[in-house]
Amino acid sequence: MKPTRIPMAEEGYPFILFAAFCTLIFAVLHFITAALLCLLLTGFICWFFRDPVRIPPPEKNAVISPADGKIILVERMTDDRFADGEVYKLSIFMNVFNVHVNRIPFSGRVERVVLRPGRFYSADSERGALHNEYCAVTVATRSRHTYTFVQVAGLIARRIVCRLQTGDQVIAGERFGLIRFGSRVDLYLPPETELAVRKGEKVRAGETLLGILPEQQA
Image 1 (cartoon, helix red, strand yellow):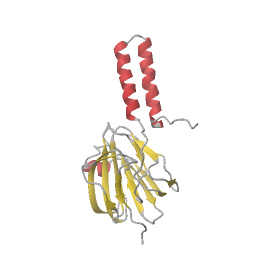
Image 2: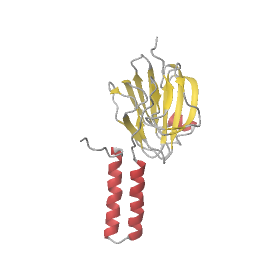
Image 3: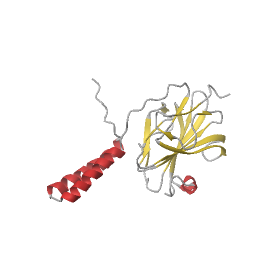
Image 4: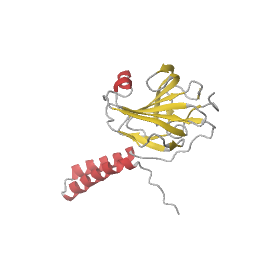
């Protein structure tokens, strides 16, 4: 039998082990209050790095949410920073209580991965969108579309994890990284995309349908 996967992001294990070790030390030294606090911290870290199984939507050519959280922006715009021309931009804000494992929105081949250092303003602010540290991944689909998703660091989130490299073949819904302790993910989609969500809606990574890409780019 195939072993059951522990529903937790592997990046969380060092934090969990450290907190558990502190709990043990304080318990051995009979520092009861400190031990209880560390035990609570260990539980919170385990919960924070949870990685539940998600079932993708059945629709053909579905664009799947890359992150858990709340949609704070849906806008048709012209962008020359992460895209080349007109796009739909969707921004998903993750608070500290959301699942923070990020997933691939649509299958394809990674064309570019760009990590840029920056500041750590609040991720849901305009200043944060412009100046914060980010990791941008551009993917080309079999239908000749390209789209980009951008992990943006935040006020508390100081660590972006992205396991992707140029040339990787990716599958919609698979895990590719996370952002520690709250932030946002921006998604830049072709203007032909038929959107299925609006600003203010809550979404789940690997599960919520954001839109439908047309069959093939001319």
